[in-house]
Length: 451
Image 1 (tube, rainbow, N blue to C red):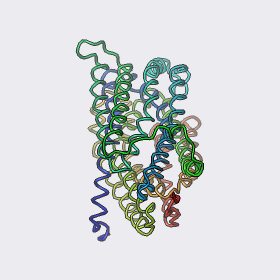
Image 2: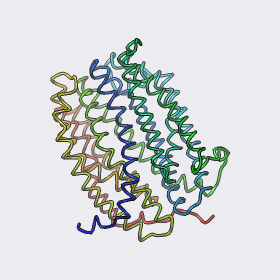
Image 3: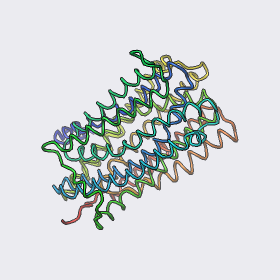
Image 4: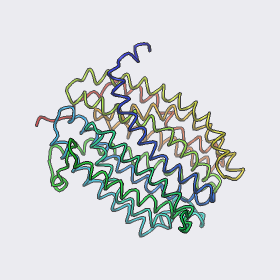
């Protein structure tokens, strides 16, 4: 362990990449936190309904992430090879893929919002509030993926600070507008949940405009928009080979997590509200492991794409050790903030009691979440080893966690916190399997082609 922190070049680059990405992730999680806090100060049902409604975007993001993550994996390797034209082609493929998904998602939210809300709850009041939210927020779902394509290219081409600045600026604006529209400041009517949706839409428009403007500045990689409508057979095959397992894994994980929310939502409004707050806290604490995962993936990918396989392997081993340190740190921090969070939120006594139990369970879940995020998404992904995630999710989430939670909730009628604990089994259960696969070193691979 003493040699773990000796490589100053490695840690300088890791910190330089991680901090902006982690801060960007924190800012994105802060929007959900702001929604929960502000709406929770008005009414428990407002907060719970929006939490359920945003599961639609959560599933959309899983699909969008498959495309943008595949672009980041290939782009990082080609950037290590200094091939800018191929990176531009990858950008075109990302935009084409996310555009189709975004149109479908937005159409569903605008046309059948009530039907979508029925997936998550039978409570008529939660359905009414959530459907109204989706009719406005659906428009913002058209823009989210396109902006992320620009930000991904910035991150892998040494403009991570600008990427973080754009996301952070959009989030700060979103939070400010949240307070204005939700509470009705400056003489405007108080819109509650609909105000949160409107704030999201306006901030997304500005985020995309800022990203497009930045991409055309000096020293940035200028997009070649003709590539959006062009096809490159070999590169398309590589993109599909990397993205399909990511899509499968993303859908497994996204739909699985949405199933967790639906299970908790069907256990009553108190369970839904407590789970909503727990989810926000979880996402806030995952920001650091998300940042290290993305930064580490870029670093490992750069070395592998440059043909330095030994260096890429060395970086991966080091990052795996760091993942455990981050996991135990997050466990301690979640336990530390449990009571302040519970006392701050305006919840019923029953919901507060449930939230305390959920936070304690989540604290230990964070170890598995951090280790798996950094190793699977960062290290394995950097070398194109993306199929493992599909297998692990199929077994640990869909064959273990979800069936156990369903049986506990609707057959055996276990306590709500016990059902919540069942939804956390997948991450903890994966650790031995992940480490076994890690040591096979199938992820040590150069994915680039000769131009």
